Length: 121
Image (cartoon, rainbow, N blue to C red; front, side, top):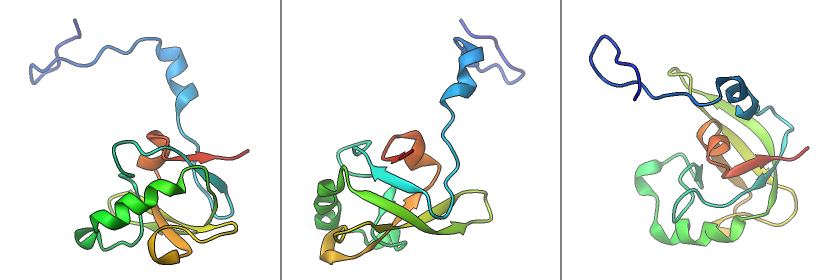
């Protein structure tokens, strides 16, 4: 029931457009405290142990499931040319992830949108 655009594909109907801006995720900054939320799929899709995406191991992904609820702090940002980027987060306390590492990489827009990370206020 959506309107048709010029290329004849239906556009999605926006229900309650006045409330649409209320649910936009906040921007991450260095020093922001985050809580690691639930995985958006079977495993975390937007939290990584390294930026070497091609060599992710299933054992590393499954061991990251224990991270839910941990507090982390943003210590750095990586901005890419296409506008996307990653936040570098470090634990506040015990080590994170497989091999007792202290640092994780988070897709800053997609992880917030999918509630894999939650900003602590």
